[in-house]
Image 1 (spheres, one colour):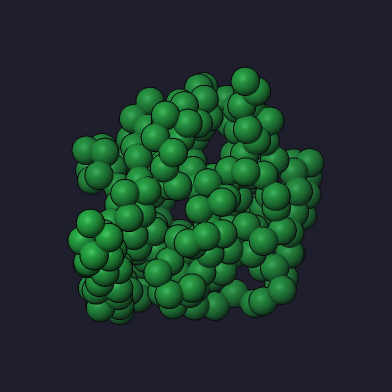
Image 2: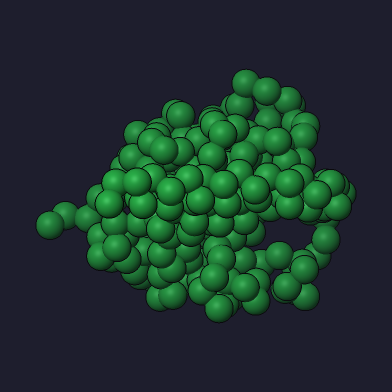
Length: 239
């Protein structure tokens, strides 16, 4: 059976030099049918120009840079693409050969809505318990959606930046809709884990409200825990 196609979504901000190496990595390592969509801020012209030069699709998002920008861009990318799978990407990744088949194999074997990939960086990811960049089944994002309360088809838009991936993964885990593809290797070059990667204004923006994002995450965690309890009660009533 032919492998389904993947929409690779790449929210970007003020890193024009990263566009070409990222696209080269994707094209060298991805063999299934796929599209690459850069999601740009309307005022970020240097980034827009650099992304267009790669030949990939460029979407200029209909909102300015601000709080929740990363999540909003990913959700916008979900809305403007149609492939049956979405990969939640970024511009500080290196794709390795076979990443696509490894993730799709796990998706087919498990039926999971969210399939985690191995990033070679985050210690929780390395244990197979989380994923910073995941493959998402479109039908799952459509129904029930990756957030419990409809605050984003893929990522919750209430956070400033941090922990949107944690919410998506924990929600899927609580639903039994999560799987981890340890052979799907998409390396994450983040300065918190990779000393060769320099901190820049985009990373600084992402980290500036980490405390507030953490407080919000701990408060929202009750939502998917409550959903899980309600599912258990419903299952008991059906017996």
